Structure formats: structure tokens, C-alpha cells
Length: 295
Image (cartoon, rainbow, N blue to C red; front, side, top):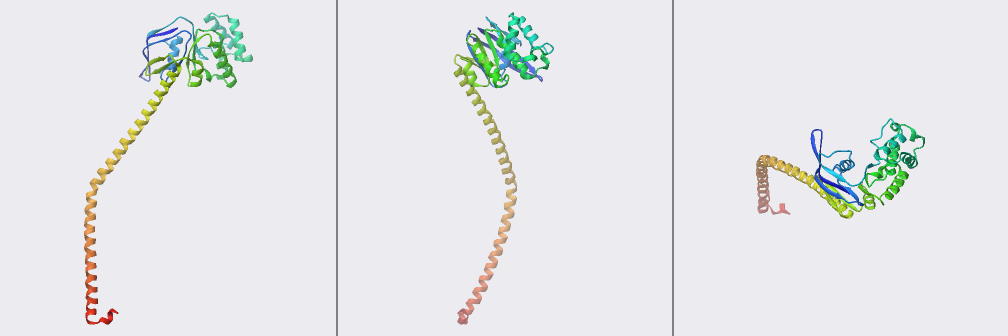
């Protein structure tokens, strides 16, 4: 069982205050596998590190009645000058397990060959992941902390890691962070959603996934609304500006148009009148005095 009691975590980046946990209270029962959900940057990995004991809370505490792993597959604590085998032996002594047994297990699991006896600082990222995952799986914990375990190694190694980890879950609890909902559903029976420094625990993982999905859709709709609102305000401003502009010059344009039309109409009327008078005068007179001209 893991219990969070008034857990608060605040840190500062570039002078800005970031609240990760705000008086958080929650209980993760023994035997439960909890999927920890939330948007990127919500603080899921920070919460895992606090539960693991590698990060300290600002206030409050975390209480557990069993052993808790470091984040599965995490290689950040290995010493670069020690060999892979020496690092594993050091971890075994810290956790009080059989050193030779763990060294042999990791050698078989990680499949590093002669590189197992080479300095850890010379390892590639894939080799580091293999060593870390083997070390994690070689020690039994009451609760495993998992942060994107599926990203470890190549496809074949990931498949083996997932198979071994699934077997470990038959006898242990877990708190799992992953963007893969199929993996969350496969490994977890409970869920917890971290949002705005508050944690909501659900007894059913599907309820947690639905809540997280609803929150994502709400955030997406909010972003769309903000974009549309800004576009609408911009469009209204542009229309208002054009309206004012044309309103100001409209009187001037209308006045010019009116004068031009008046002058044009006057000319047209004058020309038509003259032609009419001319025609009527000519043809009328001819008709009266010389009808043959009309034939």
C-alpha cells in the first residue's frame, strides 16, 4: 500500500513557479496496478520520482508498507567509470539481494556479451537501457514504478521485457505511466488522473481513461474556441476599420459622384433635347410642306 498525505511539490524554472502537487491525498492499495494519466508536463514523472524517493516533496509525505522500485529501466544512477557488472553488484548490495545471483541474471537478460565488463560510460543508449531493465527485473519489489517501459531497446528486447514485466505483475503492484492506452489497459486495473496539481483516483481503469480522454477533448475544444475567438475579434476589428475608413471617404466620394452625375445628366438632357428639336423641326416641317421626303 502507498499513501500520499497532503503531498505538495513546487519548483522553479527560469524564475517561474511550477506547482506539480497541491496538497495531494490518495491511496494505492496493495495488489493494485494503477495507470497514472495526464497531459504532457502535468508532473507524472515527478510524482513517480517522489514515490521512488529520488525527489523530495516540498511538504507532506509518502507512506508505504512495502518495497518500491526506482523507475523501471532508469539508467541515470549508474556510475560511468564502473563496468556494467560492477554497477549491478553495487545495486544488489544497496537493496540487500544476492549479488552473484543478480549479476548472473542481468548478464543473461541484457545480452551485452563482453561489454558487460566494459565501463558503463562507453555504453550506447540501447545498451544502457538493456542493463537498467535487466537490473529492474532482477530484483523483486512490492511495487514497480514504470515510466514508458515500452521505449526500452529494440522490438525483440521490448517484447521480452514486457513478457517478464507482465509475469512480475502477477505478484506485485505497479504505478504505470505510458501514452499507450492498450498497454495501460493490459497492465492496470485502477487509474489516477493528474490534472492541475490534483490527483483523482478511479477504482476502474476504463473510468480513468474516459475521464482523461474527456479532459483532452475539453482542452482541445478550448484551444479551438480561443483561436476562433481571436480570429473573430481580428475580423471584427478589420471590418470596423474598413467601415470607418469608407464612412469617412464615402461622403467625399458620394459628393463627387453626385456632381458628376448631375453634370452628365445635364449634358445628356441637353443633347437629347437638341436632337429632338432638330429632328422634329426638320421632319415636321418636311412632312407639312413636302410629303415626298418622308417616303
